[in-house]
Amino acid sequence: MKRVYQKATTRPVEGGWGIALDGKPMRTPGRNDLVLPSEALAAAIAAEWDAQHHEIHPATMPLTRLAATTIDRTAPQRERVIAETADYAGTDLVCYRIDHPPALAARQQAVWQPLLDWATLRYDAALAVTSGVIPTRQSAAALKAFAAAAAAQDNFRLTGLHALTACCGSLVIALALLEGRLDAEAAFAASQLDETFQLETWGEDSEAADRRRALAADIGSAARFIALLGT
Image 1: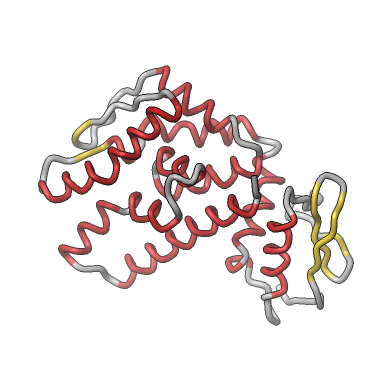
Image 2 (image 1 turned 30 degrees about the horizontal axis):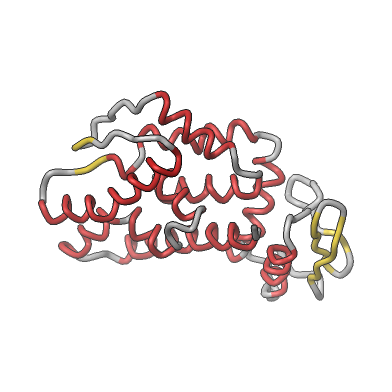
């Protein structure tokens, strides 16, 4: 798609902040008004549009994508997005450990266990840890508590949390980032702990490196999206 506008600007609108392209209000792909909860997020999205050149490349506008997803998908399907996010607690990455090699087992314990301990205290929800890949049944009380944590988020934060959970394979890691327990770099490192250990041993091919860079970028974008929402 070619760029046909000269300037993206922000302006206050009913319910928050909007963006205009040459004075024309921006809408989402679903034809909904793009109304944002903070001036900071609106400015960052406008900057994404101003940074486009002759052609518009949606892949370079992650904040725009997350905002549109909030309005077009999260808002009308809120209960479904909550359920999709909360479901990760049933098979959360940080609950699945290995016994061998001992060095990796020790790294999992050192990085993941403090996150589980934090989540237990923060949400009064203890997740069971197991060895191997066979699923372990989590308590109904714990699953309910994590579902409540997802449901407590407004639509914009829920979109960010959903994206982070999917990227990390872990609701615990995603919540830790959402609440400031981890930053984006640490969340990526925790979610990629096993993969990082393997590449340290066997090396990394270009395809895997590209995939990891893209994942780190997605986590970083979702973290920035949440941060720009303010308090």
